[in-house]
Every structure is written in C-alpha cells, then in structure tokens.
Length: 167
Image (cartoon, rainbow, N blue to C red; front, side, top):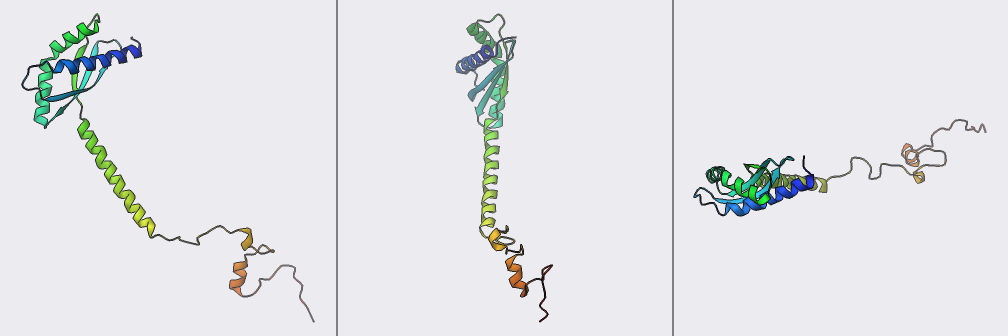
C-alpha cells in the first residue's frame, strides 16, 4: 500500500502525461479530446483516466476506440516517465461533464422558477389571524381578563366573591 499523497501525485502526473501524449497519437478517429482526471489504485497498478470529447456520441465512440488502440503505447510511455517497477494499466472512461452540467443547470432553473412562484404567492398573502397573535400584558386587565373581551361583551363579567348592594 502506498502513501495517499504519493498516490495523488502519481495520478496527477499520469493525467498530465496522458494529456500531452494524446496529441502525438496519429489516429484519424481521435477527436477533440480533453483529459479531465486520473485516478490510480493504492498499489499503483491500475490507473483510470477520465476524458471528454467535443462532439456527438459517434465522435465520442470513435475517440474511445482510438484511445483503446493507443493504450499500449500510452502505458509504456507513462511507465517510463514514472519510473515505477510496474507500469500501471490504463482504463479510459468517458467523463460526461457536459451532460451533468446541463442536468444541474436545468435543476437550478426549475428551482429558481419555483422560488419566484412562491415569492409571487407570498406577496399577496395576508395573515390568517391577527397580525400579532401573541397577547401582551398591556392587553390584559388588572383582573387577568382580556380587556378586548370585556369591551365586546358589553358588560363586565361576574367576579367570584363580588358583593351585591342590597340598598
């Protein structure tokens, strides 16, 4: 098992090497390819190289075939440059960054539209009850009865223990 920092350095170096070596490939099937990332296992035996291709799916497939046919040459050159005991085997994986970016943009647009709809609905909304649903001490009378309720009833409510005048 290798040190993780060493593994990351080797993966970065593989990405740089493959990106520079791809320009030397003289295959007409090779399109506008960009090497986006490389990952290598901890034992430094297997490397996965991610790439993108500008174009339609047929151009992506032909570029994948061109990279597969040049895999031996690329592996040899990467192995010599890294000076490892064993050259890592290379696996090429199409990185669909453009597809993921479009999906994320569509989701963000949908979320933005929903937020605008919620703001439009909220602009005309009114409170379901009072604007201030909490009663403060100023609203309560000395006897603990809500002053507003006394005004609405018209009479003062009976109090327990109140005296009656018999006069």
